[in-house]
Amino acid sequence: MAKKKHSAAKRLSPEKIVADGTRYLMNTYRRPPVVFTHGRGCRLYDSQGRAYLDFLAGIAVNALGYAHPRMVRVIRREAGRATHISNLFHNPYQAPLARKLAEWSGLDRVFFSNSGSEAMEGALKLARAYAHAKTAASGGAPKTRILALDNSFHGRTFGALSITHTFKYREPFEPLVPGVEFVHVNDVADLEAKFDESVCAIVIEPIQGEGGIFPISDAFWKRARALATQYDAALIADEIQSGLGRTGRYFAYQKFGEGALPDIVTVAKPLAGGLPLGAFIANEQFASAFSPGMHGSTFGGGPLACAAALEFLTIVEKDDLLANVRARGVELRAGIEELATRFDFIREVRGEGLILGIDLATEGAPFVQEALRQSLLINCTHDHILRLLPPYIIRHKDVAEFLRKFEAVLATAQKSAAKVRSAAHSPHAAAQDEPLATAAAR
Image (cartoon, rainbow, N blue to C red):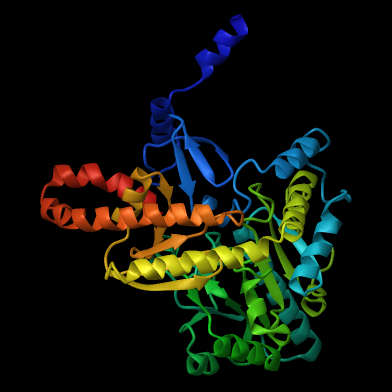
């Protein structure tokens, strides 16, 4: 009994957790006063036991939802064996996982990191290393420039941030890594004007995620592929959000055909089923630029994370989840487009599979806030684009439930919009509403 009392005494109330977070965590997120404690399938539960239909999936991480029994079994098994083995030695799961990723991607070699941002750093290093080796051998002019796209987002470390276009992410940390130039999205003429022999890499998200779910056109991707080949530069695909099944393909770039593969691709988010793991995958031509000691990671590719990732990829294959992603994506998009005929502030629906953006003619935060009130998890990017990233395991009835809830969200938010605007002159009212709205929108 004493032990139970001790455990109960140590359990913090939701209010205490929120208060401690406000006091001790760095001020980098605006969070609503909700504490989520556990999940099951496509639902997340708060500290009061309230269930939320999760169509955000930890921002594209929880592709198998929560507490998938096969993932739980593997993680428990490996936690009892070895959570970490240095990369100075082999572990049982890293090489098999690398082989599977090579097979999925059509590329050849893999390096494991802890996150997507680290994967992008490694990809940029590999592109620069390849370019330096080629120019050293030929005596040619330096190839150091990197092209990225307007509206892009690639991470928050210095290299990844340097190729991220959005001003609000860049400005507080400037000056960033030099030698980066941005190309207008899907503007082939601008691409051709800025691509020359000084470019060592061009980085493209096949579907821009944080940028608002903007797909790259077939013509733009294929011209980038041709120019990269012409100038012996790396075409780097950032598939951190769109890859590993989210579009209904292993990788979003596969829609462009086998003849238009990237040289390097970065992945992370769903890779280890919720555990931190990223990777970059390269063809043999570019991978050969690395030799022992040129790059490394303490934690990247540990046995626990790699075992979980292998199980995730196996589940996607054996449960035919790509077919489910495609089918549920068609249902979801059709339902939203039907709603757009009745709510004229929906301007456009974009995306593929289970990565969808709903472009609004008004601010998106109130809709996210109302969704949270109605036990639905979504988010907003670029101020007015609602982003949906549900788990791959959603069923027809989950899509139907989402559409019912989302219709109610649209109707309620629409009715309250005028009231919110009329009350905006009141500083007290604005202060009450702002934290939840902006927190939910991040």
